[in-house]
Image (tube, rainbow over all chains, first blue to last red; front, top):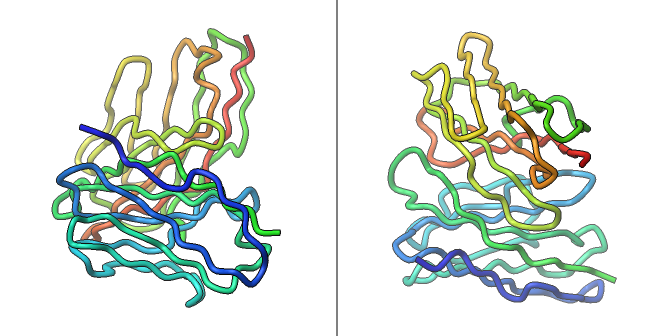
Length: 114
Length: 111
């Protein structure tokens, strides 16, 4: 099976702009989770989508949003970018409907905000 | 929020030595998983241990789980330079349907 893919891999944006990142899960996986990773805060959970519904949510401001399509592909959007949003954004997919919820990660999108 | 705390935060050893890293968590869990992340890349699943298991092996990896102490350890035997990476524990709380990741241990194996 093909692995989790994320596009784009690298992105440079300016403060105040908005950005959309895309994640295609492993075929058959219905859950997609998003994480933000920075040197200072480590790996932080953003949200998880399962069958097109947001099922779990981390503690991030409303500028961070996401959605999932009927084919399980997911997008996350960050509006009004701030310098602190510079990070590696990781998505992970899993079957999502049964334990143990093992996750398979994509390579990440490196976002730089200037 | 992050469920697990890992210790040490960083570990540096010589090739051939064993590396041990620890993870502590706060609530009742269904299972605990260990992941590895090479610099700036995605995480890779290494091994999973269920709450009713005490020890598990996979190749050079040995994981233990002590639910009474809410802690786990990952032992990598006969380390290699290629083991240099960050290692994260992640837990699935009882009744939950997602993972919570720990803070990670940065392992450096010196050739």
